[in-house]
Length: 247
Length: 124
Image (cartoon, rainbow over all chains, first blue to last red; front, side, top):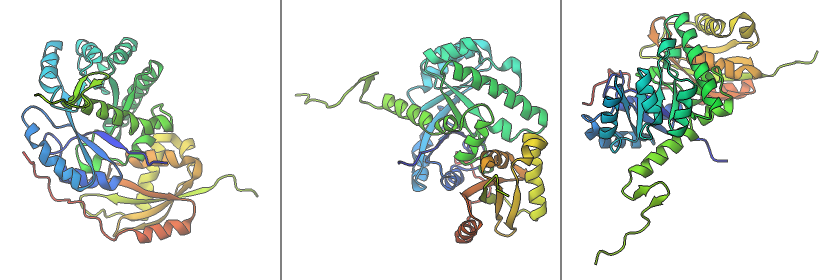
């Protein structure tokens, strides 16, 4: 039986707000048994360093996934950001700050991941309607375990567990795919995939679902997006197999 | 009397930016506190935690637990993010069913693992 390949789709490095360098992250990820890491640092200004970091990751036997986080306040700003970034990065995550942004992000097919606040119930917009739209728009719910791991008080952790459990319940009911991420901003916040899966089981996922949300679901998402970004892609189900002579 | 549970031995290592100055008792107390917070008194009692071995210099050791509670203990260990105000990562290297095999694996691990704990230098 083939060994399962695990992916962490949310790690921040010193390219943005993280504390560890991409080299340190690559070293730790390879030690923890991950096969690919998505650095969530990229925007239009630092896309030129992607090749350099990919090379570093390759030395440790890892695959780098280029992810961009969008934190916009209005649907118009979100659309602009999506237009600029979609053809340049492999994964786009939208942090849903308000209801309008959440609804647009869920139904827009250019958005891959939906992230919601776990600090306040009023800012968690993942409900039945959102789940239905996410299913149609092929978006995935991201469960970032960092707020649970790093909670400073019991209250914060309880709140985060309650909100994530409710979101997972709704997502499972409406067949919205779920991915689990570490959301680490330093190497000491990273966790091995089996540990993340164990934490996810506390939120209402079964052991199998938790492992799938760390391996096959993110793997398929990245594969689909890479295919779309290739020069041979035309539309879903249609791609150039062979180019003929121009003469 | 028939034993109603089997044991699992978890080989773990602790990564931290600087060496942790804690002994076996203190580490066991940290793990107990975390499981107690997460699962309560009844839940923690079913895990049957025991810290069999801990090497303070190499920051590695073996924890014994009930075979049905491995997932619970994994989750609890993942939640420990600092010990004595030092950022910490507890990584489970391997889980075995016998103490002999666990000791073999623990002794066969490389003596040092340097993660590059120097301060991160921004690339851009």
